[in-house]
Image (tube, rainbow, N blue to C red):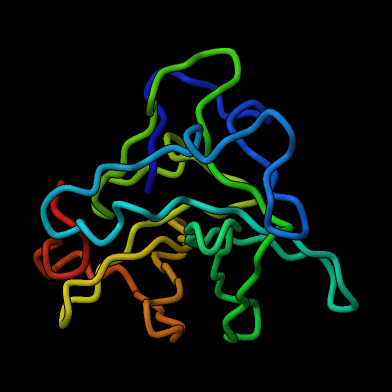
Length: 178
């Protein structure tokens, strides 16, 4: 779960991706925050934390997911409320450097057993998460609910993955080393 060190997470930390997958005039993918991708998380080198919000006939739903650049567009995958995978090219936000503070990355991920709902970046009770498949070592971004000890996201194959924080198991089995 990201924990902010010396920054307030506001609108200035998000880049809105146009519905056609392009960026607004004056914005660049160079502004997207690149989280630490060293060690077992090297597959996140070209991935970004994304946030999607939808209002539909079921109500309001928000989730974090993983974005990447694809054919001059910004696309992302999210775990939808019904357990399906939602793939979009546009119509979401990307965690980005602040327009007012050009620190390259004021955020860090912490291990699940160190996560505190009071310190984590949170929106409507959900936190961004970095998950790792313990069989393949693949890492990807998704959504956590620290209060419920659960995280979910979409892996490289497009499958929804749900993780229950098993804190008695060594954390390296479930999360990237940092």
